[in-house]
Amino acid sequence: MDADLAIRANGLSKRFGALLAVDDVDLRVPRAHVYGFLGPNGSGKSTTIRMLCGLLTPTAGDIEVLGLRIPEQAEALRRRIGYMTQKFSLYEDLSVRENLEFLADVQGVPRGERRQRIDALIDTYGFADRQAQLAGTLSGGQKQRLALAGATVHRPELLFLDEPTSAVDPESRRDFWEKLFDLADAGTTILVSTHYMDEAERCHRIAILDTGRLVADGTPAALTRALAGRTFGVRTAQTRRAQAALHGAPGVLSVAQIGAMLRVLGAAGLDAAAVAGRLRDAGLDAEVEPIEPNLEDVFVSATKHRDRAEAA
Image (cartoon, rainbow, N blue to C red; front, top):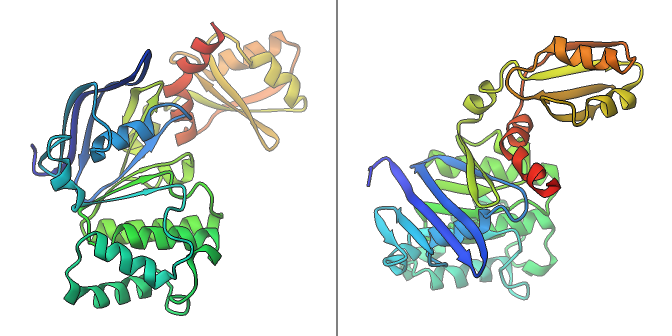
């Protein structure tokens, strides 16, 4: 395994009866990177993460995580990784400190190091005045911070985070992500699944899964750059009529209203003149100009076949 990689997976597949949940996925996750997993519900993100952790056995494929073969060496991997899901999974009837003490014991943190380690986590994650508070009485953002502290109590080399911020407010999400980058700067590799485009844009690299298949993989900048010339802004006095005229038109992948403007994503070869011509044919006067693509455009472009398949 390449020493610069934390995770390598080849031909990873998982079948549940007739359902092929993950379909021939190849992954390369560099060390000390924040690597984002995006995809619609049911795209296979959680199943993939569980296989990489050794919690699920693949139907096919090879996995190496931190130089260990998975699932064969999953037990050896367990103490080198942290795992956190969107659902708060600590003990609500224990205090903040008691939860961390329990997890330090479970993860085998040497007894002589526990107090210092827990004190450091309480300070880092802002619980100095709440360490005696029951976990069940914390706010959503505080619970997520505590869960992250718990997932890192044993100083894991690799963190798996499965939609960790789905139930918290924007300010708490920003604070949570600052903590992730602190961990990455200290050498921890982080694989995080998310539904939020603003979070995905912060990742060093992202992968997009759709119906179990890997449909995009790269840096946010490279993926958006690949769509250059395929996104257009439309301004017209009759925005809703213009949206209806463009929806489903040849070469148009998506049309979304953003304030008073329409954002149009086209297939390769569609240009501003063709968009304007379609609107003129519908009796509409509009200004059409190229605009910069964003990560949402990347997501729509990469997963467009999902909607087409469901409509067929």
